[in-house]
Image (cartoon, rainbow, N blue to C red):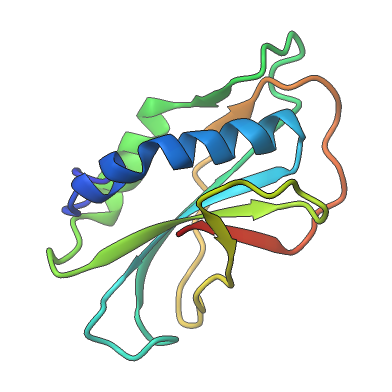
Length: 148
């Protein structure tokens, strides 16, 4: 997805163990609401630098026979990325975890706020991410975590 968007995959490769650990911990504790890929232009003023965003909302009820894993529909992700097109190579990105309040801390992650989406239009593409963790979802919160 990163490479298809015209972004440098080395950043994600270097952060993969920390990203995976955070997702694993927050799926198991059922605090993970969504993962957000924010693409921004570092040459623009912070707050006006967002150029693209992909939200992957976690659906805990998708698989009733839970085995504790995250599932992504590659066809939906591929279609969405292709439709958005490539971003300029000067763009940077970050992965943000949208968590329920009270989530456990995970080494390498810190709290943050999502960039403004003012002027953006939201498009739904259907279920692209699901978690196979037993139980039903909890009430949404406002905690956001980013890979440091």
